[in-house]
Image (cartoon, rainbow, N blue to C red):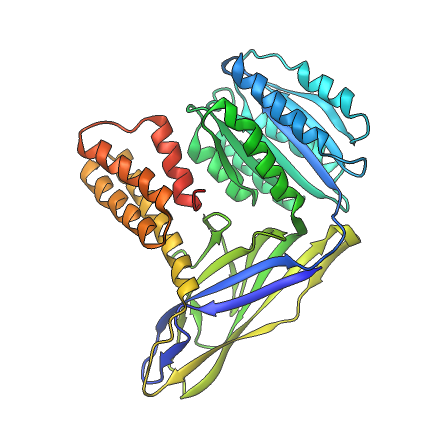
Length: 410
């Protein structure tokens, strides 16, 4: 198994008569080929507050037990339950006695308030004890606001997890969780945001997330970008991930070097990164304007700080300019536009600008249609219709919109 690294420009040609030409560079990174699956180090952090009583907690327990049944003795498991405080239900251990682990899950009872950051802290501590040469993933599930906790602390904990090479996935259950907080935790933790709208969907969503975790080949991946003199990243939001979900990515720049954290590399879902570049005036012909390299860890082999060969980024400068547009990159640009348009719409709605929100949601719906994402277009258009009729968006409307903005709905 090796790292697959490919790139393409939105337009592979630039006019040789102009300077500061803007181009989008799409970079696809994945694990490719065959290789032994690294063992997993999995932690469930499960909300057992009073609002989870009845069907919600019952279905979450069923979903968690289904995942436990798919573990092997090579894997490790820990389980944290939280209400207004956290409890270590299953300390980090080898997945040997699955029946005993499932009995502990069955013993979960609902009651109390919600303190997400206490649960998250306990989960990170549990995962950290078994992380060596394993793929370490935390699944944080909650159905409510962090009423007894501190959202800023939760986000800082997600950053701590990154330092330990741990991935955090969040699952919002029902309609009363804070979508901003769970998205920020998942984005900071290089994981995914998931919405369990109805209790009966919990098992399928847990299973889909576990399959994604099983597909991880490499961890702790970083994209290293070196740009030639005169070529530079855009000043505002220059880097974003557009697949498997859309995330605004932080970038560390030093001189002509830039570093972007990717996190896990999957075998069936490449991470696609979109860079917004400005290119100086170039002499006619093919020019190398930079190079790309990926560093990563290979837990199945017990290796860290591995790196790919550096590959050049080339573009053709033409005196008689003829565009050479890449359709796949255009799709990536549309995916990012859909996300940003929806984010602006949400901000306008929060600010009381209903007209502005409708305009941006309509733009996002049109963008979704243009990229062939019919399901997202339907969700967004329904919101436009609701707002135009003078109605307020429900919590489920808002959460479906957030998921529709970040992914291509199935």
